[in-house]
Image (cartoon, rainbow, N blue to C red; front, side, top):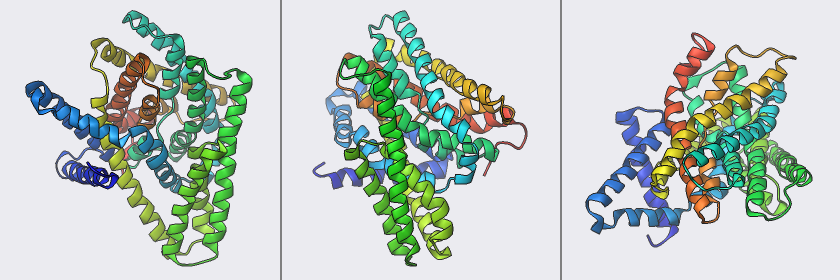
Length: 420
């Protein structure tokens, strides 16, 4: 590979091939199928390495993966476009009606999950004689607790759930990333002994990241809204939305605010008020078609890369054992994180029967957790956490993704979870 263009060409070619194979033969949900095939290809590479080590196939593929840099590709590349594309299709009114449930799950629920996972992980590591300080268990709890909006929205495209529950699932997944990054940053500061990590610092960081990100997204979204309303030329209007996404995400960095939250807010504004008040029918059709295509292409690349990242994890038996034990732990923490806010809010409003187990199983983990794990500095702790994180993410996407329809049908009753 000589240039970034060569790498992009290879990835797009592989993505197109795997997408075609899945659609033509496997017929799995798109995201699940790509992860499964990426895993299969990775295991094939490992098998070839074992049978013919002289070929150096595994080393070549790992070198290519390092050139891609999953963390940078997702967090500073794909994520802004994927979040904006997802937010465009979300009903802002439905989110506003359920703001307390969504806000509580995305904040209190995430902190509760982080604490439960940290405590449980510490016990697992002690049982398996893995020497890791509790601070790094807290880091793992912070990186694995946020639900992944890309994975969640991808699965919900194929499964119909009651609108009230869908708003909670999608809304929480869109907004808890900003909170998750704040908690993760604080946990890493504690683990490394760098900087302040007290309640005051946590509150200040949260305000700067979450509230500042929302304010930035609202400001740039309003500028885009005015620009869209002033013309009726869909090619330029599509370009305005592209500028909105890239400009907002780029500004978030130097302003030290949450880029994900900023593009979500901007996407909600353009997808709701913008589509109704600032676009013609022709523009609306072209713009939504364009972003649906962007969403499909980038989803394909992301989940294919998740499948291939198995080559980056350690095969140490103790680490793999920890990954297996972490799966039920993370599900249990998710149950507690959902049950606490819903039970508290249930005193003031009625929730869909079966909402707690449904929200528990619908809390998919995905590329964001993997990217956060890979962002840790090289160390023995990183090796453990990347392996355990990857095991949980693969289970979440493949097992929870494939059984989502059946589980939601059982939790919510007949007709509640049907293929679109």
